[in-house]
Length: 284
Ligand code: NAP
Image (cartoon, rainbow, N blue to C red):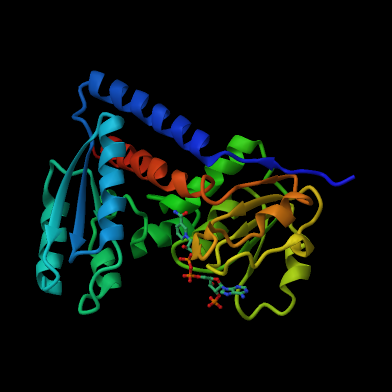
């Protein structure tokens, strides 16, 4: 008889994190703190960025936090954007700074992210945040990898001593997860496009995390029976949004699995507001 994996409900876990942050914001304010303030920046007109940022503002509001938005025209120069980022860094009324990516091609995104005050780097992507995380004393943790750990914890997954395999080594997801899983005493392996036998390496995993960007790359043959599978991928296909994991096939082998959509996706905003509260507390 085939097993059927438990589905890890990211929407539910995200709602729980957001409710927890809202309660903590309420305590913070009752204790004399000012409501945390998130500043967002978009350069140019990108409909997807507008939607993402609007959702972030709504999540702030629901958690009792404030947000301010700076919408800059496409032709904004790098110097002007750096000047705004510096101004927000110096502004005592701002706790978190988020520059929504992508920025137009004439702007060096890495230079802009590097200019964000590390104390306000709620996306956790600046070199200082990445260095602190890699060194084992995290400051701001990037939101999507933090959301993955939150899902694993919610699931009650034992990470200590577990074989964790990450597919993907991006700055945004794969690399931060290496540090987060090591900090939890997992044995961590990272796969990428040059990995020789992806199936064999993945089959070792008690915990498999796919952050690749290739629709349904991970099939049943990649899965150790009973493994916990976290699918970070979001791919637009003719069948709609799909992950990097073949959900139907893998569900028959895995112990637990995140769906796409409704798995990792909803966690990112929850972790952003959690980081914004943390930044406000650290600065208070
Ligand atoms: P990325 O920067 O493109 O990195 C992809 C990684 O996958 C690279 O390390 C690449 O290897 C590896 N890779 C590509 N093809 C492979 C293959 N056939 N076999 C093994 N490894 C392969 O992507 P990302 O930013 O990490 O995003 C990954 C996915 O997660 C995307 O679908 C993205 O949309 C999604 N995502 C979701 C959220 C969210 O839920 N909120 C947030 C961020 C990203 P090389 O390094 O060798 O090139």
